[in-house]
Amino acid sequence: MSHTVEKIGGTSMSRLKELRETLFIGENTGADLYGRFFVVSAFGGITNLLLEHKKSGEPGVFALFSNDDTNHGWHDKLDGVAIAMKAAHAEVLEHQADIQQADSFVEERLHGARNCLVDLQRLCTYGHFRLNEHMSQTRELLSGLGEAHSAFVTTLMLCRAGVNARFVDLSGWRDEGNVTLDERITQALDGVDPATEMPIITGYAQCAEGLMGEYDRGYSEVTFSRLAALTGAREAIIHKEFHLSSCDPKLVGEDAVRKLGRTNFDVADQLSNMGMEAIHPKAAKMLRQADVPLRVTNAFDPGDPGTLIDDRPADTPAAEIVTGQNVVTLEVFEQDMVGVKGYDATILEVLKRHKVWIVSKVSNANTITHYLDTSLKTMRRVEDDLARAYPSAVITTRTLGMVSVIGRDLSGLSVLARGLRALSDQGLDVIGACQGPRNVDVQFVVDRDALKPAIKALHGEMIEERKPELSRAA
Image 1 (tube, rainbow, N blue to C red):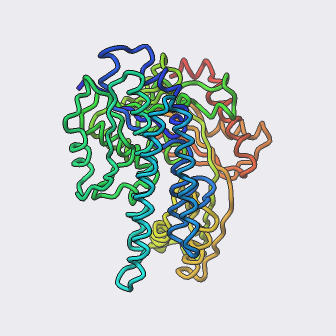
Image 2: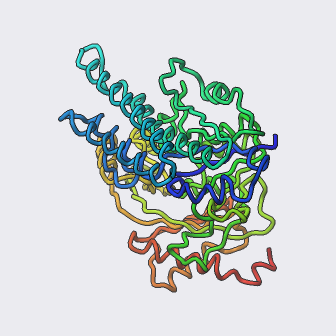
Image 3: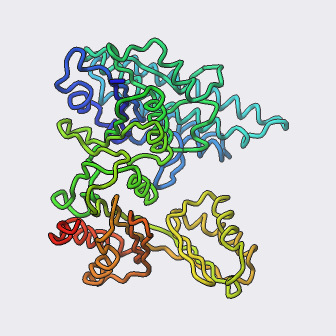
């Protein structure tokens, strides 16, 4: 197939008018406008209002509804969503008729959602029904409102600009069918002609599998990847507001970072593990299995091809990215652990039950240490469960930072030795370090306050100061 499937994230969607000039239309005319499917996220901040704030945890409509004591909090929050949605599309749409259509769309969808939640509350006043049994469906309903709104608004904007855009709603609004994701996509695209139309598709898709239950906030990338795989796209493209670079330019400076240009899905997986997702790992798996290459571009730099991600190995060894994140360590020390099987299995079962993400782990004869991406609140629960399982163990937690040097092939670069030296030269203490035999990443554990200085030091050593003799040896 000659078409592409392209995704736009929420932050970029908030600059939709700019995207009209750089991405959707740009210098394209006539048939060159088409052959592109666009999967859109909600406008920036809208999903936070509908669910909960992704970083701060501030409750949105869903969080307030699921813990409703006053019966007023979620109503007020839903009113706030309406105000935010209308403000978002008022910044984008220029014609009054389009604004009125968008306002009506918001009012109709949010009114329907409000009635649904009220009816659900009323139903659950009867003893045969429990509200917590319907929370997953409620979360799905609310999350789909944001993408439906942004896709509808984008279609209005493009049609006004002379593009034959088509709103494709996968959210299952007032749909009685309980279909699979593949069926949802296939039915919605029935009759769409990509050669003469530009489909604008919701990032959320209602389906029997329940995307939120498995992927939570990563659902739009799963919809995007499945659409690309199912339609046999030539390429899947993610448009971000920046290039996929060797480090955060805000941290090390615009002049210091390097655009990747090309990497592979292995590196993308390592980035996901460190909380720096180029794409959700399960979405990447769909593309990899369907043999659809992924490209990550800067949506506001249309002349640049961005970074291609496929299965191709590196031509020469090189460090490609330095990134880091805050972690919480869970250390279980048991003097009698040596020679006894089962300790690690129990710890993993507890972490799985509390939905804790494991970044890395190390162990020796009588100690198992996990580096985790979670909150201290959750860690307290994990500690309590493990204390009951191992009453004689010493269980400790600590907040630290982890920096990772990542590349398709790090062999021969002495990343561990050079990294330790670079951190020492900056007066930074290294609490732990780990390098696996596959030579795709090396991890350094430091105090949390030293995280940013450590990233800068390692980026300077491994990316900015590549040694000529290493290049020749590669």
